[in-house]
Amino acid sequence: MKNKIIDQLISVGAVKFGEFTLKSGIISPIYIDLRIIVSFPDLLRNIAGVLVESTKELDYQIIAGVPYTGIPIATAVSLLNNMPMIYNRKEKKTYGTGKQIEGLWKRGDKILVIDDLITNGESKLEVFDLFQQSGLVVHDAVVLIDREQGGQQRLEQEGYELHSLISVFEIIDRLRSLNQIDEKRYNELNEFINQTR
Image (tube, rainbow, N blue to C red; front, side, top):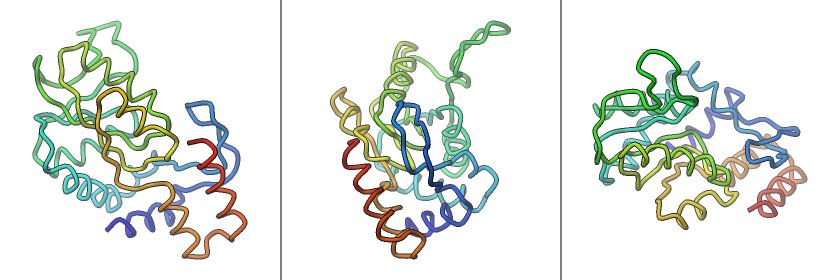
């Protein structure tokens, strides 16, 4: 199923080449645009199915989606797993309830944080901090793709466990095996990732 998802990501144009500035500030020759998966229900369903399967042994009571791309993934997982879901807002509301976390939960609830991908882990730690300040318990996070640029190690240093479905190396290997990239680009991509780990 993993190769099927990689193939679907490639076929829908989620894997792009050029010069892209990541949130971490790194200039990357490869960009994985997972925002478009909401337009492909079959792909989103496949992703949710694999994430449910890969996290079934984890201890949690609520799924927590991270804006923006983590929210539709978390919603699909919630529906498939019949598990309640919450999500954090990027900014605290200045009207209505003024909430920064939407959905129903109580202090002490264990959550599974779901997001699309991880690079260096800094943005994940910010989200974990928000959830924990609100009284939620965070231990595990799951992402579809690990860009292999230190995120998993950074989370582990802080006592969290990251579960990722696909490594960027697997995407690059698959692109090469399908002759979607030549040997020169393949080597350049691997060298870039290894230098920025």
